[in-house]
Amino acid sequence: MSYLKNTFREVSNPQDFKEEYLSSPDHSFCDTCNYTSGRQTSNFLEIATLEQLKQLHKQSSFSSTRRKFYTAVLLTAGSSRETIGSHTYTFNAGMLYFIPEYQLHTIHHWSEDIRGYHCIFDADYFLLCLKNQVKLNEYPFFQHDHPPFIDLSREEMDDMVGLFQKLQTEYCQRQRFNDDLLVRLYLNVLLIEAERAYLSHENKVSTPLPRKEQLVASFKNLVSRHYMEWKQVTDYARLLYVHPHYLNDTVKEITGNPASSFIHHQLITEAKAQLIQSNESIAGIATHLNFADQSYFSRFFRKHTGITPAQYRQQHRHHAS
Image (cartoon, rainbow, N blue to C red; front, side, top):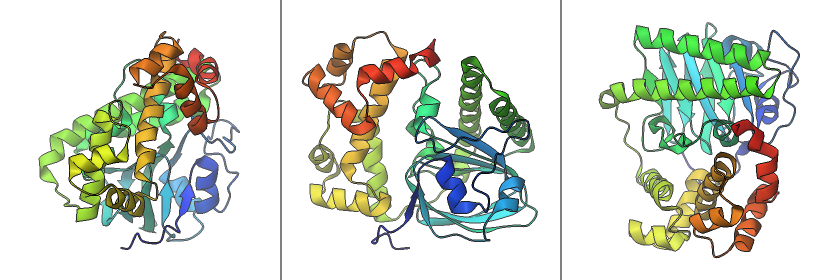
């Protein structure tokens, strides 16, 4: 598969997803309410059964898209054939698979008898929950150098079905902020349980990556560990023994985004977490993230989010209480 032409449609939110894949983009997946998410650009979750999605699919296969959010799919019946990154997989009943943020993805075929659950969410939705929780990029199934699926045991499958059902029920019935917090908690539990199952099966699967994808995976892993101390692409190129231009070109070829965007994304995610989950002053957070001063940090944050750190804290702080 060639990544040289970055002509793939970016799917950024639930409404984009519905418009790209479904014949009825205004459809609500909640049977117990008439809630529709609208064009949310951040802080969202959408969960549907695969039966619902299959019924509303525009066609049996689709062009490649780049999903700018996280996806978890549980297959309870039937099968699907999909390409995630550079690998094409056939997923069967009893499998749980994931599509990381910014990953190129193609649906080739869903069987007529497909059953299960499909959940999409963005980093902000996950973030607005527990203090000091694990970061999304630390889950192995969201890392590009790990296989994105688990072949569940019968017991693990039963547990996962229960969690997806509870997540869907709580999401559709929420009315107050505390109800939404409960949904986020169930999402955290689902991912933690998935990680537990993944690690118990980890030695049973092996999917080697092409050389360029190995480089991108190594870059992302380094960024996740060192983004507060090293903020330049040149720093990571030196660690990876490649030229900065080659690193940037390779990251953009594989992901559709420049290498610097992943450094900035990590910084913004950490800044949001500290703004929500701590009582530290904005100046203190700027210092902790190794910005020269509060003013520079505020300009950086506003450039990447559209609002100031103070505005973000004011808008979202109630979720952490």
